[in-house]
Length: 217
Image 1 (tube, rainbow, N blue to C red):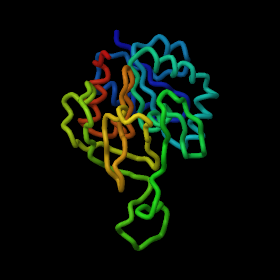
Image 2 (spheres, rainbow, N blue to C red):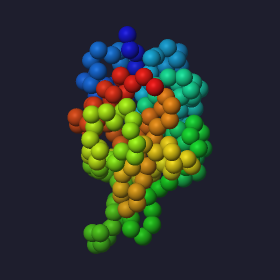
Image 3 (cartoon, rainbow, N blue to C red):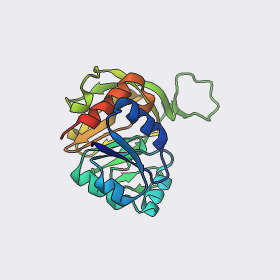
């Protein structure tokens, strides 16, 4: 049985991810896991996250699951989602937070004269609101098994104020544009991670989850 552990450390939309995975892969055993041993014993791992980075890292550390995530990153197919992607990098500007350092690079905020906080009162309709929220096209930078059956420039659903900036450009597997072109998918060896939410991205998101379940890196 293909067992997929969704890491539940207290900061993520775990049930939405589980529902999407069950719809995409009804033949797989999908489990929301709060125990390190359950993550260690799974065939593959989904690492979601949402909320502020300092809270996510603190909660992950307090949950006792940090080392289990790092072991999974070294040994089995792992899919990072949203803040779960960001946490794989070295450091985040959000709260000046050290992250897991699986990948070298930093997490940056959308900022500059072209952006406005979503809560800001402004008459300038050309300013881009932060957080970036809604559907956006994703360009495939290179072929990857998780893109199979998903057309280049397909729309996926985003909700985020920060994005990853890998030190090694070869990590980038997908790009989106929101004022700037930014990395929205990374891949290396047994890890694939995305900034967007597959579970909120209709058929394309379900296909990506199905591809992950079938992926043999």
